[in-house]
Image (cartoon, rainbow over all chains, first blue to last red; front, side):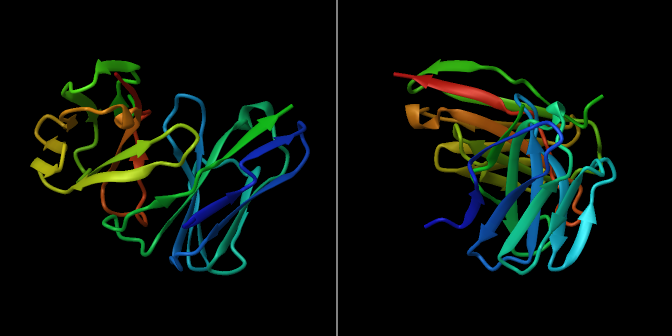
Length: 114
Length: 112
């Protein structure tokens, strides 16, 4: 049973062409996260939502934005992708915001920028 | 200096071997320690979670934390080919809305 679903699994975009990645969850969790994972690097938190409250990491570029229209869905918008934005983008959810709450990850969307 | 350091491997062992995976961290404020397993083309999944120094066992897996040395380990006994994956340590200081700092991951291959 899929719990955290990411679409598409692979996305190819052109340099500078806006792209949107999507995440949905069937867990009814309050918190949703977006991570960027470049090849052979650690996943890096970009931002997260606690319900409708948006929390941006200080070093997340302005080029990255997010929307959460309802509990189930969260989107990652990259306004003008550069070659350096090619990465795996992971969505995760947790029931609450305490560290003891397990984060459940989706399979990721691999973004290629041409 | 990175907050969390992890040997990227790859590490190749024969089936049945004991595997030791390690991370070091620099911030003594970190209190919560996790190990995630990531299969190829999948997202990470939580394997083990510990809070205090000492050992925690779950089947073939043992997580060990030494806060005095800022060193954490994951031991896998009787390793199986199905254990072949990338193992990421993840650490948190407990605030920031469940913010995790991940290591780069160690790629493990268990050979038949």
